Length: 147
Image (tube, rainbow, N blue to C red; front, side, top):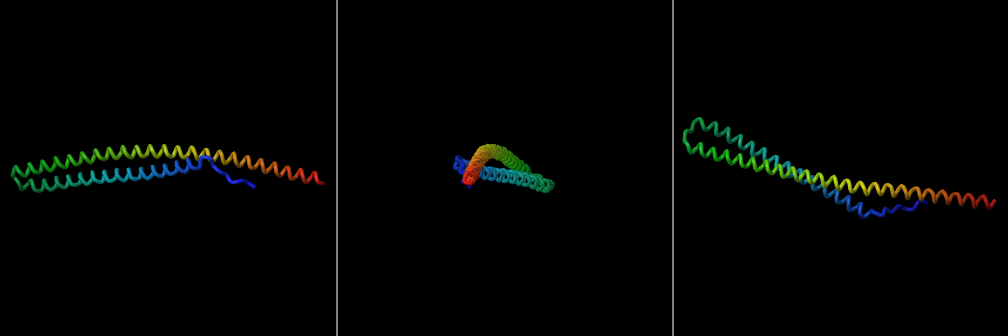
């Protein structure tokens, strides 16, 4: 008896759901970029540590000033690369935060239209129940009047 329910904002809800999925993908990619930046930082720190170990081993035997200058330049280079990696991590963290905020907004928008859909469906269901009840009353009244 119940007529099929047609939601008036179905197209908008579909668009909101697609946007939400897109935002989820963007967040995932931003998190991956952040993890890659953190991995790069750890690699630079490890390379610096390894260079320091190598320098300590070689410094015991070498007394040339050129060796110490080269080591100093290497350590400065590692420090610059570590600093760049830290800056990149900060940028990636900002991207992740922004992507999270966009996802939360998209989810909120989707939820709004889902709630409207639920309310519209409930109203539709009540109207259909009333119509069905009225029809049953008419049938019963018609049958009792025929007797």
